[in-house]
Image (cartoon, rainbow, N blue to C red; front, side, top):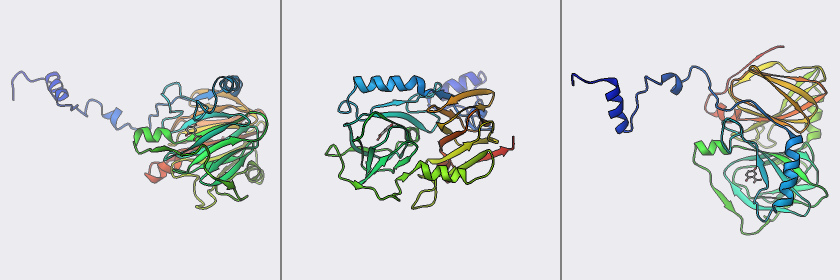
Length: 314
Ligand code: GTQ
């Protein structure tokens, strides 16, 4: 050993070998509890709606493969709405086509406004109505079109950030603008109408109800990465306080209220979208009869044995 050796000298020489000591940053590398980088945040529809409308005047679908505003977490970069989930607001106008492509990333759509637009997925054409959940499974060609009246806006939920981490995504355009399709059957595994979900939530007693979407074929979550659910909270009611290792994106389908996340309070109303970072305790309170749609990264966490949830009444 050199008599004049020191930690500074050791670290400098290790750095020259592209190596660093673990023991000075053990807590950051192996944290005692989840440390999401996302922060709680609300994207207000009243503010976003006019921006979408302007994007409709300024950008044609020929010039934008998808006319979408990404909802970017203030503490993160695109495409992160949470650490692992992406959310965007997509606009399609009557007569437009968002051309066919496919990608490994999974997408879901929750319809916010309008009806009679369609998504054609792998040969099935699904007509979309407010409140419906429509799935685009991994690697299926899909295009969106609108043959009705008025603008159509939906929330896109994708697992894109996962593919920033696992660089395993591929994307491909289709040779034609539209992938050939036939109208989807009423019980298509791609479409989950709001009326069915609302009936399930109404069938439960009490001021608060929670129901998961079950894939019509597998009976499990809507994808291997993303799961989805809806919640009903009666006016004056509240959810239990929960925390889970999943990150969550919420969308207010109907109603008004607030969610306490850690020490922060997020106020929201119909059309707003908000996010809950992993492991932060959260509790919703409704000022009006409320229905929330949500998606999360629970299935992928379960696959790697890392999903945990705690709930307490109140
Ligand atoms: O509609 O295919 O928000 O590929 C982001 C990427 C929507 C889509 C997004 C996409 C799509």
